[in-house]
Image (tube, one colour):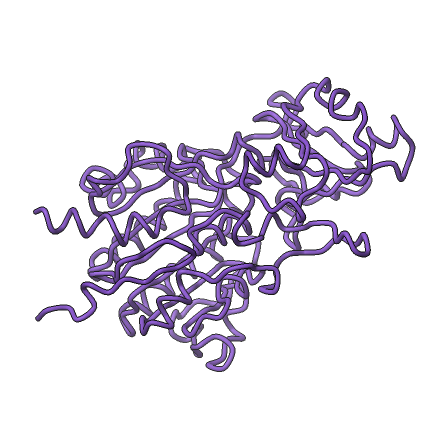
Length: 415
């Protein structure tokens, strides 16, 4: 039977998307440095992915900088960078009253999502995220199913488009600091695909495992083996799978002692110029800082007159660049009014902090691993079908819907 939607085109934020020929499952594997998949495939624990990388599309892409969860997830579901959708990090400084504001409310979004646009056009859409901090933005104006595994026991038809999730999955609600929080997403995704067969499903995990365990470790391989098993089930159900990540992950500690590598910017600026001269904002900060202590490789500084600060900060070992607002926003595609006067990025194995006394590192039970800068920008870009006409370079993680909807169709038509 001919698919009545085969030639339907949906335009979202200036990009045109073709209606999916098969159910499309887009997965954002939080913190998935490409080496995690490489090591797990090499160890033989991801047989489905090993086959998919050969038969389908196996590429890498650049994520958005700052390489944090919120700006990248929203970039993926809007198909655009933060300069368009407005989410430049987890926190910014409100210029009106000087308060630090968390950007997890949909009111900060400046455009709609691919998910909502397809739902408005009649598609069945399911969104499942690990942490509830993302749910409202991912589900912005969405007429469909949207819930977090963190709050799976609180879902209602009115608020989430579904109920009875815990009974359906037959798993207890996991701890927010656990690998099981991500497994719940996939278990729920499989059950909902079997029961409701949505047209588009977006699954976004947590990077709890990646913050604690390096690629190739027993714990990391077990986590990736778990995901591989669920991806195989979705594939067997006739889905197209598209896999990417919001950011990579790197070790940020002294290999000899395990102590975190940190430049405490606020302490340094206060020592140089006195308190109150400059304000450091760490956009990685969110309600879930146990596994990274709010330490990442990207920071912003609010100050009226930068003076010699950029030169002095660049001289600090571990600091790779200090840019003014205009330079950073042009380079990274950010909204200028939600970024500080200066942007600081650190080298691969260094993090940036505020004041040492403001960071609770008691939850770091393993040596620090974190993200945030250009050194965590490379992420997987894998689709279970070939995309022969896809551009050979220059991919971004927020091109994943475009590639999966517009380029797999060409591959099918040519066979």
